[in-house]
Image (cartoon, rainbow, N blue to C red; front, top):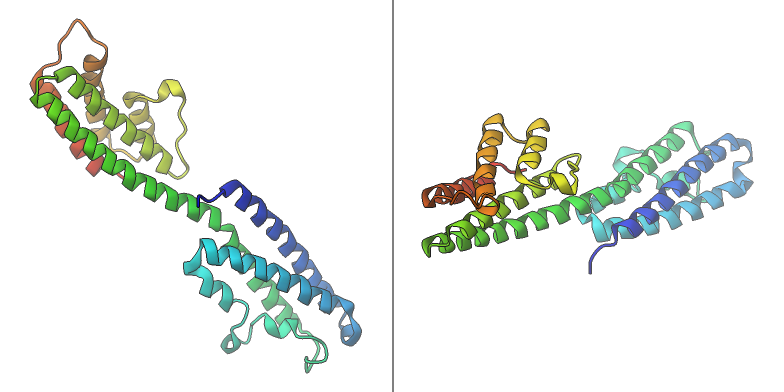
Length: 251
């Protein structure tokens, strides 16, 4: 089932706000040390954090499973002496009063858990981009094979036009995968402007940028210039260069 990232982000934002409230409550518990045995805030803290942890744990488990153990370890890590459970014990189970160091450990671990939680949307986007890139790469290879078939059968102009489409699509994918993504208008969604943006973003070398300009010129002849017929050798070189380019210029 596709992930609704917008809904997920809203839920994570809710949990982030709740984590901040829990953080404040933890320090309030510490400040009320003289009333530790009867403080209602202790039980409130336990309930709110455990409710928060259950929801956050499910999100990490479902969407960022490789960091689940790290998330769990922040809750209980007896060897470190800085686990969260010791701060959340009920008053009757607790052998002493809460200390500053235990409160500090609690809020520090909560902050780390929250950071893991907040990393989920970007991790999903990266994963989706990787899948999209693999699918796109496979499609581009197929389309270049089709361009070669067209050329072999004498359809020079369509072969060059198709190779140009492949290059353009690859440049758009590079823009989408850039960090941050490179934005472009509909008017800029062609080979030369896209290559220019990628070069300025230092994703493409100057040599590759120049090569892209040459490929754009051949593609334009195939697409638009009715006064000049593209030469077979030019289009063959274009297909070969596009094939090498999409393998060489990647993110």
